[in-house]
Length: 428
Image (tube, rainbow, N blue to C red; front, top):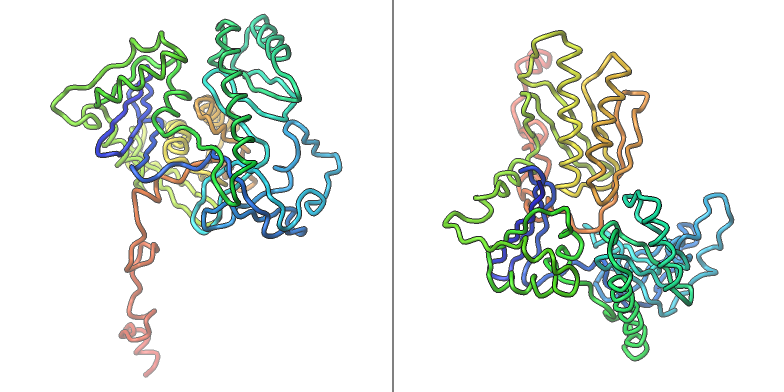
């Protein structure tokens, strides 16, 4: 059972995806802000760094954007063993360049940008210059894959490329071609606009939060979309008329007296999921700590003592923790390197089963986390990419007293406190 719950109030958009009654994803956008991932800018190269094979590009956002060499090469051209031209052969200081934001500005780092442009639609992603047709791996039927592949190769031209999304399975070619033409026209309009506007400037803006999530999340697999605003509900229905009119019947306007996010388990789930110590149903708990380099998650049995032997207690705790950890990575949008310290297990079979649970739950994550596996120290390594700003940074602010350390310095550290009795005895 999957539901999308949309709360719109005073210009704030909040969207929650619930799976089997549990909060799986959460999105937030204010009245004066827009996510920049997906936007296209006309920028100017301000610095080329041969030692890093990267360049900095001024796109008018205050902090210069970061452009890796690989993001300048054509899509689907990566050969890990093949030679690549140096960055200074691809761009030069002062050069004007169209780039698309791939990853939002985070902390003191500027946005990550690319010249591998993509225009996502409901049925496909249009990629100018890609010269390739790819089919979603989730479309498993061989005949359907062949049909969509043949259609893609027939309709694309001039080195255009596309990724046909899972939602396209079973849809008529006329419907797909209509969206293909729309996305192609968006790119043509962006190119035309870039010819006349100064540097730096915004060339193309992706959809706002709610229309974007309706496009990307509201599929046949969603059982219901609940929204608290009647006018916005009509707007969503109008959007679906051009994309998937059959889904309009799944939209319901919430009219209950209890606030929407309290009627559905959104607010309570958010408060629980963003704590440092997160309880597990079995009685164990997780401890989540974030550093500059990585996120570290510790698994503890806590009050769970089990009924059989120690190995069974540890295994059952780790199994529940494995599923919860993958859900938290997705919900909190934790990116970068993640290290999980599961409770030590003696049996190798138990390790395989814990990993299998993580793989199963990771299938639902659109960011596709990479489960690296167990280290020699018995830690489990994961990497995960993210595009948007972290929710944690918006829900919490750094304490002005402790500076985010979570502890206060004692008098000993400040150098003006009394010493212990042992120290005094030693000094005498």
